[in-house]
Length: 475
Image 1 (cartoon, helix red, strand yellow):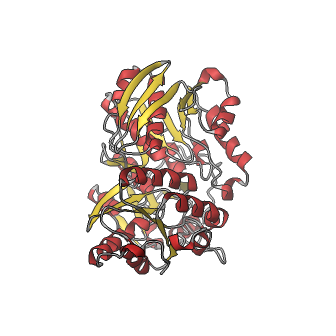
Image 2 (cartoon, helix red, strand yellow):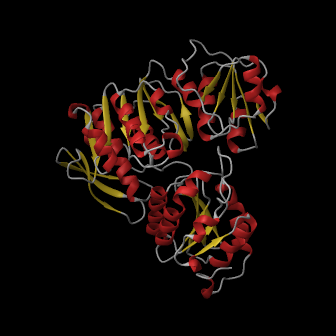
Image 3 (cartoon, helix red, strand yellow):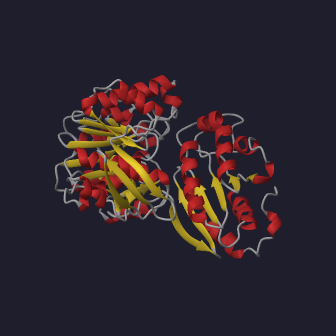
């Protein structure tokens, strides 16, 4: 994979841009933003998709497959860290001396001079960004924004607004969140992920501390998370606002109901305010607390800040419903770290009622699977009634010998509650054997596991009524 040089200075001007991997959720949004500002934009991707169709509808040419000819007369190439070094378009740019920018560098160039609110953290970034954008739009602030997922209320992941604020989900995985000139930073949490880039937990925390110190106006962070508390301890208290369930939080989640869509009570400077969301899960109530903290710091009254989140409908690929199949409810979630999986399964459990939760886990990255197979097994065994494990979605990594989805399945204490099915057809058939009306079947990964949902639907609808004894048996 490409290791971008994030230290290289940004060009003064950017002309014609070619995006390699333009169909990705982040890349497509950035490409649209450049297009809307009058830049000539082209792109390529490995497969057709709804995102590719949407880009073409806006007049952005997109080629399928990668070929040096696709670079055309581009004056800069925009790439992601998931790109392989032998990509012919990348190699063509190097041969011709065309500047190659990581997508975060392109975005940092785009937002120069804006009053930037950057949302960072190991988990909850996309949802928190979506909440903040939704609330600001309802409050009349009309921000510009770039998110890693489509915001349901806005029907897009990125758009220019008429207001002074620019809200961006930033990425800590490769350190690129340090590129931005941030006014207000929201840190949802810090976790021991991306050790392939940082090398140690201490280095991860230092990167977040560097991010926080660079925020020109304010830092909003979790009072519940041990690592964010350590970051807070190294910052002047006058520049901080905290949120969470902790008694020390300025914006405190005082209570909540997890029955279906969330209702909650936030205590802000000792005064309580009641709010609600249209999405389930305790983690979403905590995300709301962080967003309200940002809104209050921006000068909005607590009452209107909480009310602006009423009925928030979420984002794509965050506990996203895909309807039902023969009475079995189908969901997809982006969860790809054990902490996120716990939250997703708790949410599913709160919605399942008397039904069971059947998880379809696609391990993401060979390095993460190798390091965390036992942790994944533990959280799935604790949170799901049954788990079907697919093979690893390698994304930006080369395969590691011996690292497959079997590492997760083999780490279960009860082998009867898991199946390793690397072939998707076999996985769908196994789910169909298990699932019965009232159950939830949920795919989990930030890879392409959502593409298996049509196969799951077909298999479930085509299956005979499963036997009660089927659950808990290995096939």
